[in-house]
Length: 147
Image (cartoon, rainbow, N blue to C red):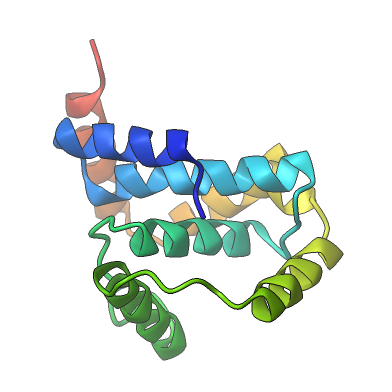
């Protein structure tokens, strides 16, 4: 369950009219912090981000599943399940499953949240995008940046 401050910051982003990806960023940031604190680990920066996005969707952020060519079928289906979970009444995860997942994540290392790993992931993710796409998002960032 996300911390209260994270939910509050995401709600504030929504009130300010920011994009769902910006709202979800709060959850990803929280997940990175958890890994750095040693609460649990992750296999890669990509997994850390995926956990954060999943939490965001379950918390009610209207973040659509990834597009057809960008992610696997399983990932898209999981994202759709996460979105529907937000709409359905909250059911607590069984203690057994919760414990099992904690144990699995605790076995993983914390280097996935290092500056180097995140930087490497950002560079490789950007390289997969077209020049026009990168340019478009840079222009949008310049417009929305606080003066």
